[in-house]
Length: 286
Image 1 (cartoon, rainbow, N blue to C red):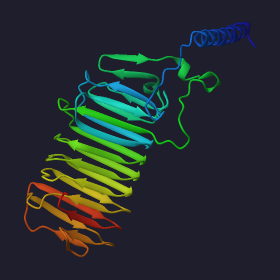
Image 2 (cartoon, one colour; image 1 turned 30 degrees about the vertical axis):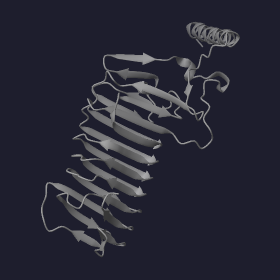
Image 3 (spheres, one colour; image 1 turned 180 degrees about the vertical axis):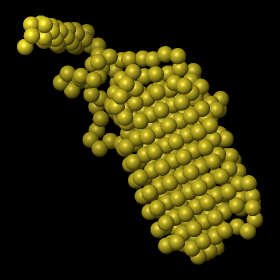
Image 4 (spheres, rainbow, N blue to C red; image 1 turned 90 degrees about the horizontal axis):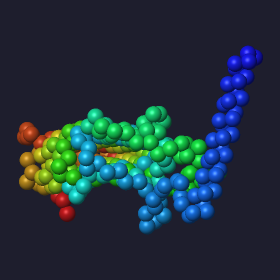
């Protein structure tokens, strides 16, 4: 080995030892002064939570791609914010730059450095190298992660894509004229709205889809590969329906329609629902 290489190896070893000593001293000092160097907040159920303020962000696109997580998107909130429950720091990627909110399980530069409009933040390497596991949050075994995105009325989201492997997705109070594309491998999709002109594409591979929108005025393409589809729309709403259940049954406002039902009138509002193995039920909202 060349002398230069040996010198660099010695310097690297010295830096590693110095870093370990510094971290140990800092941790001991923090404990003596009752100061936590790992910042996690907990809710009333003892779950670690993190709230990200989005009031200064001009978000018009949402992209969420997660493995095990329940996702809820709520509009009409007092302020825009993202609440993450049972998430461990640096084990996910989050960016709010370029008018797009991106949340995913991918590990990369966005897992360590958080980018937002015009700036970025970094909380330190202590979460990447949690000595003795002390940097890990207290998460119960089997606890499901949750991501709650609250959007104020001033938010102008135009497009949202949500892809979840295991978990439920809820869209509540939607009044946006936006395109929502939601895909869930194992879990349910629930839409609760009041007079929305939203365009939906909802797919549940192993779960149910439930839409309650009394005066729906948008367009929806819904599919449940192994599950049921429930639609609640006012009977007076001018909406065009194409409902199919090849191996199940279709119910149109309490009337059995066999395996399929199609309206004979064309309207701007359209709902196409296909339950591959389950049932499709269209009812009046309660």
